[in-house]
Image 1 (tube, rainbow, N blue to C red):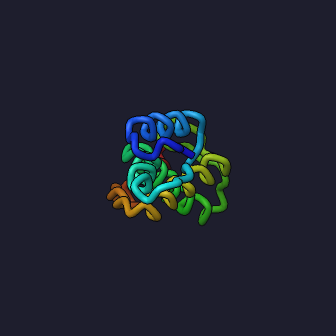
Image 2: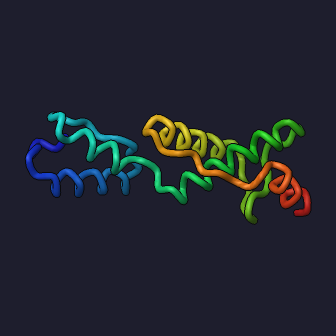
Length: 114
């Protein structure tokens, strides 16, 4: 909680520090703090795009009975999928647009070649 509710710079610093420590939100004691907090805890668009790609690929591979898979040269398993699902859920809850990705067919072709 940022008790100095009239100093937006302090609130921003505290939110950024919280994000660095892995927090995904912050309590507010004044309504004027809410917009700043919500904005600062939204996922970065590049992180969101990667998370969405992970979720999409997981759906594809789980239909084939495959648990862990390769995406962009990195192994993706359930802890990573769960992280990605949380990132996408936070973005949706925050009103962020979900990134448009290449078609599922293109993704499948790339991953099946590896």
